[in-house]
View 1 (cartoon, rainbow, N blue to C red):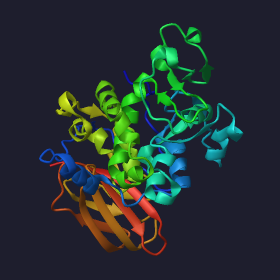
View 2 (cartoon, rainbow, N blue to C red; view 1 turned 60 degrees about the horizontal axis):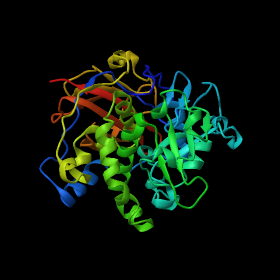
View 3 (cartoon, one colour; view 1 turned 180 degrees about the vertical axis):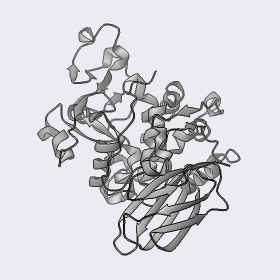
View 4 (cartoon, helix red, strand yellow; view 1 turned 180 degrees about the horizontal axis):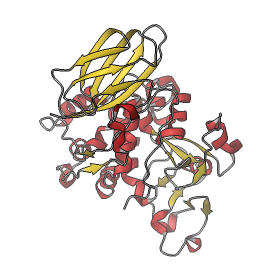
Length: 384
C-alpha cells in the first residue's frame, strides 16, 4: 500500500506556474519495438530534458510544491515530516533547522559522488533524482548503494524522527516502516529504504543511470550494475502509485514536459534492466491523480496564463492578458515527452492556437518571454 498522504495540492507560484489536472492516467507503452542499446538511446532521446531548474530553484519547488502536502514536507526514506508555513520566505533554510538531525535537506538518490555532481550540469539538479530527506538519515545513507540488509547486520533504524540502534526498540510489527543502514560512518556500507518507497527509489535510480550514464560510469563503473537486479525486483514489488505519478507529472512541468519514463511505463524497467524472468513485460495499471478537476475551467487556471476551452480538441485560445505581450518561445508537449508544437511567436493578449496534429490526452504548454527570460507553464486536455 502507498505510504504517502493523498491530498489535493494547492499549487502556489514559485519560480514558474504549475497547473495539474485530475484525470485517469493510463500508463504508457514506451518504445516496445526496441531492445537493448537501441531502447536505451530511444528513451534518452524521448525523455531526457534539455532544461532543468538551477539547484536552488529545484529545491524550492520540491519543498513548496512537489513534496508539500497540507503545508508539510515529508521525507522519502523515513517519512519524517516538518510543517512549512506558507508565508515562510526562506523555506530551504527553515527546513534545514541549522543542520540539526531532524532538519530536512535534499537527497540525491543517485549520489553526487557517483555521477550527480554539480560540475555535470543537469545531472546535479534534475528533479527526478531529488527528494527531501531527514538530515541525519541523509548523512547515514552517505553514498552507499541500496540493498536488502540482513536485520542482524543493521546498525541503525530510521522512522519519522526515530533513530534506533537495536531491533528490540522497533515498534511492534512495524519493521517494514523503517529504513536501515549498515556500515554507519564507514567507507563501505549499504542502505535499505522503507518498503513502501523501494519502487520509487528504484525508478529514480534507473532514470538517472539511463539519462546520465556517461557521468555515472565516469565516477563508478560498477555502482549501478552491482545493485541492478535488486532495483528491478524493488520496481516490481512496489509498483507505481498515484502520488508517485502526480509527482513526476509536476516535475515534468518544469523540465521540458519530460516525466520519468520508468513511472509512465511499468514494463520499461524490466525491458531495459531486467534479466531472465525479470526481463518480460508486466501488466500496467491505470492510475488516477488526486488533483481537483476544476482546474480545467478557464477561470480556475493560474491567472497569468489562461487556456480556453479546456478541455479542447486542439483548437483553443491562449490568453496572456495578465502578462506582457511580446515575443515568446512556445512549446507544447504531450505527457509522453513528445514535442508537438515549437515556434517563436509574437503573442498578443489573446492568441488562437490550432494544433491540427493534437492527440487525445494531457498536454503541457511552456512559454518563455524571449526578452525577459520569464517562463510560464500550463496544462490542458485534448479530447477527440
